[in-house]
Structure formats: C-alpha cells, structure tokens
Length: 213
Image (cartoon, rainbow, N blue to C red; front, side):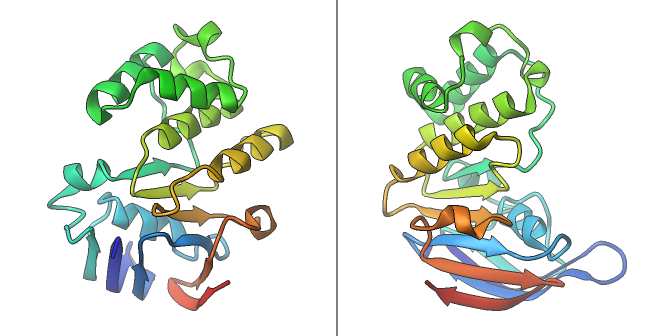
C-alpha cells in the first residue's frame, strides 16, 4: 500500500477542513480527486506530504509517518503545486539542485522539458520566478516526470498551460510506469479520460464518493 489514511482530521480554527477522511491508495492507482473549492483536497495532499500535522487520525506513506520521516517520503513523491513557488535561483541552478538531491540525470529533465515544448536552453540563466506562469509549470512538470517516483501528486497541473501545453502534458502521462500511483486534483475530469482508474470526490472535508472507473 502506498498511502494509508485513517480518520484524518485537520482544522484551522473553527470547523474541520478534513473531517475523518479514510483512504487507501494502492500501487498503480490513478486517481482523479474532485470536489468544489474548499472541499479539503489540497489540505489532504499537503498532509500526505508532511506540510500539515493532523489534529486527529493517521497518515502513512510507504509505512512511514509524513512528519517524522518527511525527508525519506519526499524522495518517493513528485509533487506539482497549483501555484508555482517563488524560487529565486536560475533554472540551471534549480536543475542542478534537483539532480544532486534526487539523483536525476540532467539530460532527462531537459528532454522532458523539450517534450513540453519549453525552450529550456535559451532560458538556463533566467531566475525561475521571472518565467511566465506557463513556463514555470512546464519546468515543474518536466522535473516531476524526470524523477520517476512511486507517487505523483498533481494539483491542478494544467491551470497555467495553453491547450497545446495541456495536450503535451497528458501525452507524457501515458508514459508513466503502470506501477506508479498518481493523484490528480482537478476540475476537468474529461481531460483525464483513459488516464485514471479511480475517482474520489470530497465535499466539506468528507469523502462522499470513492469508486473504480
């Protein structure tokens, strides 16, 4: 089992953002996680990544605690946030950092970026935060896919992409290892046709639907 969530509760002041959520994610699960804004989707993902400590319940990732074993867990996960972080170093330095910390070959990142039609060579010395929203997202996608992780988490990954960028992204997803698990947080279920085998719907912090498709 990749992720085991039991009775997860998380609150920020009044009310539960996560309200006794229990989910098992198995090897090879390709999940569309749906729900309105404020349903708890991003909070759940950030709890899996160890950004948030639960008020109640437990989360295990590969049998490990996301808080205590966060460094080990993050080596197994590729994550694309909805909003790119304000990274101030250059693309070249960012790629070098990823290669050193994750053991990824630079050539693989560059190839993934080129497959996303990002002109990476011409922008190597440009600070990441000065890139356009679409360019940032393409680079983050390239890095995530290059890492060959056990679990991929994509939080609205195509929000800043044009139609061609979305097409390239979904094409690359077809090349993921069938054994890897994927969580897509999305409002566009139709884009994931043929890429998912399960749908989880959250509303007001609760799982209201969880089914194979």
